Each structure stands twice: as structure tokens, then as C-alpha cells.
Image (cartoon, rainbow, N blue to C red):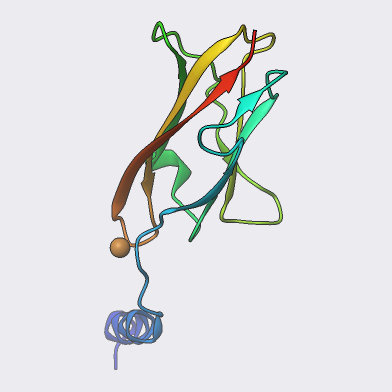
Length: 121
Ligand SMILES: [Cu+2]
């Protein structure tokens, strides 16, 4: 085999051996969907069922008036690859906040979803 054929053979082997991956969906979040908090949290944490491709995914938090309430810094946890952190803007006022996400899994399948939490006055 020449080098290229060999490389292709090796790549095909890896593809064949790769475990079948399902798309990644929300497993749990902090804050949880629907909770009322006395104090605004510093960040949103979302555990997905599988690691997601951050660069292709979007996660954002908006207030009732539609103002973006996150710091656009979504990143995977250093230890738990399926856990995503997203910082919230400081001093969020009272009101309902909606977290929306489009999570792209390693198999490129996208999952959309949203949940809300409320900061009590
Ligand atoms: Cu999938």
C-alpha cells in the first residue's frame, strides 16, 4: 500500500470503530427550569447528554424585554466535557430570563431547546 491508501485505510478503520453517537440533549441545568431565585446566579450550567461542539452551538440568555443577559462566554468544563458554563451579566434585575440553546453534538446533529428561571423582586 502506498502512504495515501494506508492513511485512508486507517481513517476508515477509525470511523468503523467509532461508537454510534446520538445527538446531545439537555440532561439537567442549574438553575433548573422554572425556578424562582432570590438572587441572580453568576452563571448558567447545562449538562448535556454528550459533549457538544461549542463553536457551532449557541447558548444565550435573554430578559423579558429581549436584552441579552449573558456574557457570550459559553465554554465546556475543564473536567466534565458535557458540562457547559455560561456567565451571566452582573447584577441581573428581577424578572424572567429565558435560556435558549442550539446544541450541536459530535455527530453534527443539532438539538434546540429552552428553559426559564425567575429572579424574584
Ligand atoms: Cu445525533
